[in-house]
Image (cartoon, rainbow, N blue to C red; front, top):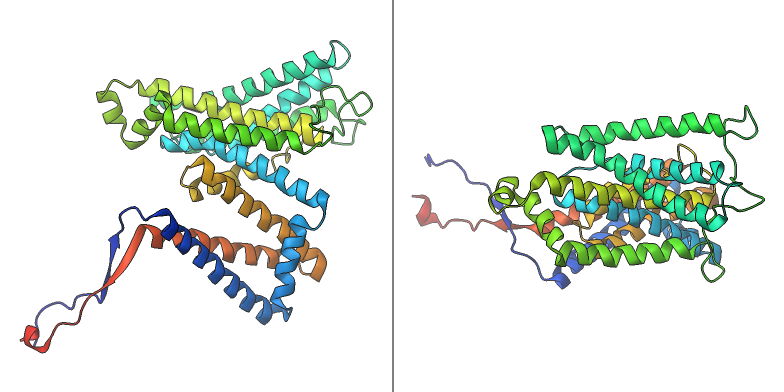
Length: 368
């Protein structure tokens, strides 16, 4: 009798860094597999031709010129929030407070639009909106960073709780500024005068946020990859002990990075209130502060890759809404398809990082 414990037939081995084209091939294969599974699920559950569903998804995002602009505008907003969270994530500061930082940035913009509309020129109102929104977002990021740097508090919990505080602040001022009284909403701010409305680029109300997102993507990539401060963020993320050993002031890096993170989120609040919605509500960020966490992680904290992951998420969300409208299916079915696709995309990262090796069967003589 063989007394040796039976060995598993396969084992996992961590890969060396895959060439980009092989990693891309795995991701494309994952998307193709996800589409096949979605087609099967669609046919079994609804009896609808899956090709029609895929066409509907595409038309939901790019069916008209207006839909195309809105898609790219939404991509820009999600990308900006994802970029904002990335510097903090790179140093392993888990900033889950993007939603709240966007809200307070939007609230600051709305306050300037409402309180200063008849007092100073429009250009000065917009300038103050920029300063106040960036400052409000930065301060909202600074608070948990300060407690983390001073007393090593749990940043995940503190940034998450700051979201709820920001939501209630917006809810409070919504009642203070509501128009008309008793409506429970502010409505379009300065609808007649357009004071505080951000300027349109080339006659398009969608282009400003897209251009800003493109600029921030390039600048943040340069900052993280080529600057001294970006290097310090990476070292702190690898090991705080090593960072201290080489003379990096960890507390300073944490506070500085969260000021940047919160400031960019505040900029998003400015774009949403001053450039897109012209009002502020508790749902103006639409949950994208949390979606951005997934986008940043899927892109492995690379600002350039984040462009594609942001596009994928928005494309699926826009297409999912079109499915519900076109085929009379409820939103849950669209969410099922979105979940399947994201599951395959996220799951393929395992095969990029690891490979499966199968053990060769031992010969008869080796078992004796």
